Length: 321
Ligand code: 13P
Ligand code: SF4
Image (tube, helix red, strand yellow):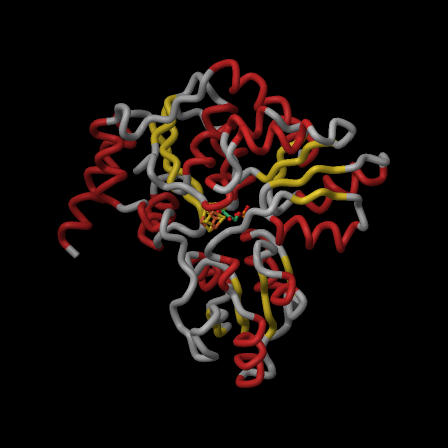
């Protein structure tokens, strides 16, 4: 509508005048993903977002996603200004892994290699030996396991459990979860599959093991989009945040995409899973961040923590390269 168009025009002007670039996660609203693409910015999974921000020549990054994504950008490129539409966009995994308790857990097992998911605070990353995202976690744990490492994994117990099962690695799991993916229900999914027996099931590994067990493809957001293009089925049931449908449908315009059901929603659910924090990234908030900046929008990371957290983050990027 008209108001949105006004914001889009203003944002485009401000991106140019501020030498800024938009970096958005697949779970943000379609209009934000479209704007990032239309302005030479980027839409991707959390690993790709970190890489893009690191390599782009803009002096200001505006990160549309949740706080840990903005922090990762700042850790990697402290010389750039990193803005977010709102600093209140949290993540249940990050919130469920406070640094003091996690440090105490690690200190109890000093012979373990500490691997943390990117969905954590800078302070938790600073306590880790490795940072991983869902697109590279399996390979990194496999590598560490082959070197004989015992592993502390935090904070997502579902992703950790999945990797443990796949690799056979010795892993102690922090008991966190993503409130969005944790809601997917194997029982409802089975009912849905019954209605669409010819459909393939795509699952993000932050989902419970019983849901992952039903999957034809398991992976990060980017990996699921890729699977949508390569799987032969023309009907796909997708268990992840519904934000992914914007990009996925662009990639497979002739396939039917169906949202996987959450518990209690029944087999015909159509709009179940959407991260409340990702939903905070609106056009107005992007405009305000660019126009006003300041404490409400700019990411700052304590320098001592930044320097420490850079080590495991770079280890991941080097491994992925
Ligand atoms: P990926 O995009 O790396 O799969 O991460 C998913 C996620 O939970 C981000 O919030
Ligand atoms: Fe965190 Fe889950 Fe939201 Fe991703 S979808 S930001 S993992 S709460």
